[in-house]
Image (cartoon, rainbow, N blue to C red; front, side):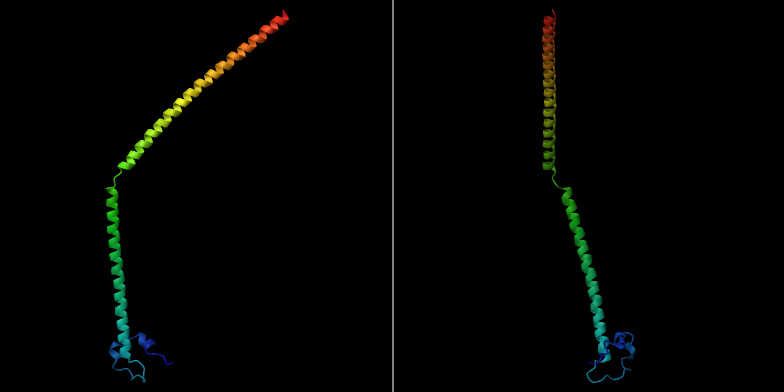
Length: 141
């Protein structure tokens, strides 16, 4: 398969040969004409340049629309109704105060019960020691 002149180094330098298209040797039968190679490469470059420009423009449009959406979201957050959250926090605070009060009352009741139990044990121990003392004195006398 013969090498195409469009793929050769001469074909790649088509832009440099703009003025020398008419001085080019006549191509072999079936080979592309050098000016046709130049035209294809020029069209390809224009399309590639246009694609790059279109890509950049599309990116810019997407970036601007993303910024607009972010600004809308920020404004929506600023106008967010927080009253249900504040009511929930107030209810949580009331529940916390009620639990604290209940725990404090329970601790006080437990302290009173512990004092009563200690007093009762002291009285029992005192009564037992007095009974033991009386029995020892009776035995000794």
